Image (cartoon, rainbow, N blue to C red; front, side):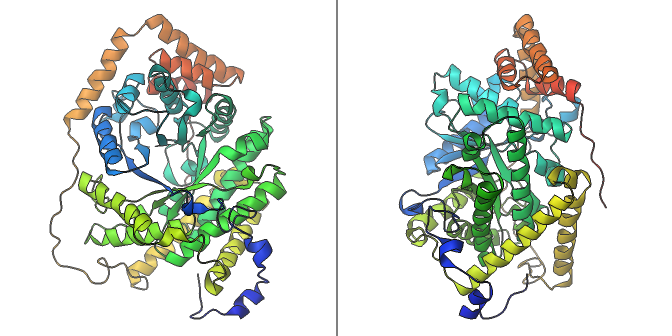
Length: 520
């Protein structure tokens, strides 16, 4: 994005900047300055650390370590088989069990994962999409077993399947069936777990795939509009489900551009919800979001530099008004973070919160000639993208045609070309390099954990009540065919010791599988 060296009052006059309509006050429409009137002076953001590895017991130890270090909320990373609906003993899972997150096959694994952690007193975020309905059901089932108050459960399932077709790839079912599962979750959770966020509409992974800041906002909000419309079409009241929508953004390297991006996203979403969807509840207009620092910016070369990158990115998130934040470990370009790397990442947030003074003033960039001009420029680009998506027939058609994927691929190519040519600098990679890199400790997953997990799920199948299990799985299939809300059937299935893979397979049998259209 082109920028001038100096910005003046004339730049604000050129965009007809109105501090009343464009800014307002914190906690008031259009929420450019934040969704809370007191922001961090009233309550700091939730400090989450994304973690999960090996089996449930190994991850449980890491969660307790993070809670002891002062993290305020848990964020669960699941392994690839769990994400795409395969059990640990499935041939498709060979070599992947517990590698990029924790392996969860059954209600027993979920019990071990949260052993000793009061679920109605801690907020839990789960990065899970295609199998989000199953993992949420497991979480609720475990809460019931521990006699936690299910109505008080708080947290988020990512559950943003559209971005999987765009940028990440952990989808299972054809798009329209996947959308049906999501609207079922909206309706069910509204009554059963009213404090739970049933979706975190995610721009993070599209940014990791190479999108620009404006593309990240535009495609994320377009996905959000698609979910809102699908829920309305399913008969849900927008003002009942919209206040529980949440978003997930990337905090990238360009500090001021990121601040402007977050401010822009809030403003555009507020107008969309009020003016396009006719939502009446001011809470429906609020864009609440979690932020994670940019994993794609971390380098294997001179990994200590990543501590600095992460701190700058984290600061942009809080000055942009995030509600919760995850800071990456400096070693994540090499492996899952060690305990020491996770501690440094958490301490980064704590130092910003308690030593920098940055949280003491709400939206300190308000009125800045440059930041307001940049917020406006990103908004223009976002609205242009939204118009183009509408002309294509909406986000579902744009994804099915491969248009969104192509836009991101083009942006990623342009950035990589700039790095390769030296036009864009990556410190330690194409400038200020070292001939030899000293070794650093990295996290290693015990290879024996996969064998242990396979044995565990096989033993579960041998001792469970076969008739109860068959009834649970059969009900999932029946509800999938009939159009009844799937969540009660999925909850009954997990309580009957059906596994994640078995429940996913029962829906595969009814819905089929999605096959990607390759875009070059």
